[in-house]
Length: 324
Image (cartoon, rainbow, N blue to C red):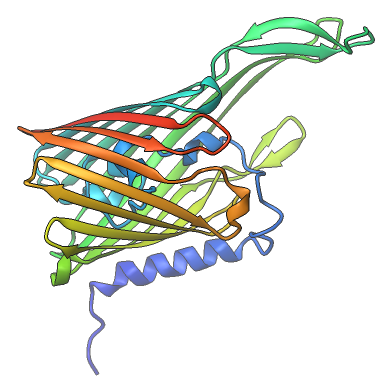
């Protein structure tokens, strides 16, 4: 009898883990739609990834891989730093920082993301003609910091993980007209896992990831979960300078999504990108096409992406990455 190929062990383990986790929620496709908390944890802050329609699970990269599949940074050399800024809809802004350093023992990484929701108007219900009283403005925010690690146990397999510490500060709730208030802060610890298998043919990559694995939280009297997401992806060089990536995504709080991204590199200096997400129920989402461009020179990459957002304003993301 032939021995089991040791390279298959991580793949089998992650398949079993994904199957077990999904099986814990028999109403996965219906009861959890739009019912998760800390939704910012599923946001895509990287300009390159956004331009590819977030089809990043099987794409290798630097520190930005911590926001998609931590196994993607396992084969970097030296140090990589990335920063990014997104002006989201409704005057919401996201900023991110990623750092990855390759050592003899693997690649260590740190990721950070901060959300600024802007100024919001606070009110409380009363018996006036307006039906409410003005309680002034408040400024909610959210942030997450992650510590990641990735390594390549063989020349084909890459494995990565990340532990994240997330918190939200949603201001102070005015419970009644007598001045009773409640501070609306929430924090949790979440985990990301990823696996990538690289082949020689067409630089084909097969990958899987699990993001935002955490215990259930409770807000006031209601329990909720954070946006757990399972992804399986494939990426390959289909022609000289041209790569294609496809990802099947199963989020806890939305319909199954297929993401497709195309990237064309010209002379190692210019990247042209495009991506689109196909949802199980396409009429339930405003996000349209994604486009982007990247400029590379002397270890520095500058990336810009554009996302069509239907009835809302379009979204622009900007990012800079440096590899030493």
